[in-house]
Length: 207
Image (cartoon, rainbow, N blue to C red; front, side, top):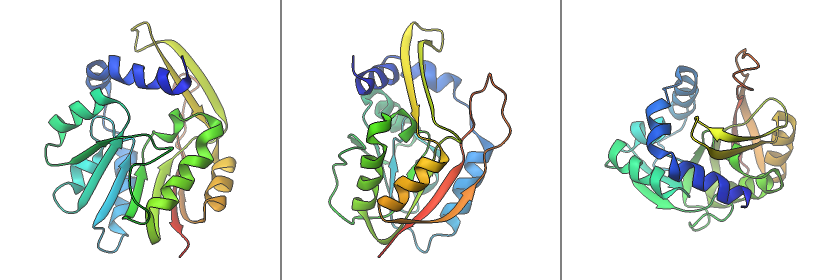
């Protein structure tokens, strides 16, 4: 099975289990709020890899045009229950089903880390394509390049894969896609058992 198929199957098969075990990350929420508060009148925001409904959709579905995109049908089904007012689309971040320049901001929480390393540049190019001039991006990555396969994700016997490019490569990918990095949040300390905690990058699309 391809890496894309493995990730999709994992999130489809374990949607309920993942939802039950997932907890709110206070640091992610703090970074998100700092990013969103700095936007000027955010009216069109894309949450890329929205899953079951990230804090982006929960905060913005009532105050802006927030659209969530994910390729897992089961994750989107849960998102309709978590954030009933959100607009949701099934799609692939490598070929977003939206016209050029239609969003003011894009957020990608723990989503690009499931894309094969060879496609990370393609995803960031797509984010740049759907952003308006001066549109802004917030994404999480990993401090270093890190690839992992877990054949027993969540003790289920279902396989899951992660492909993280690392901070240095992500900076290069952002620059090549036409972004200028405007802020970075360093990762917190983590234990080897936890795996690498992500830094966050805020970037602006060059006009």
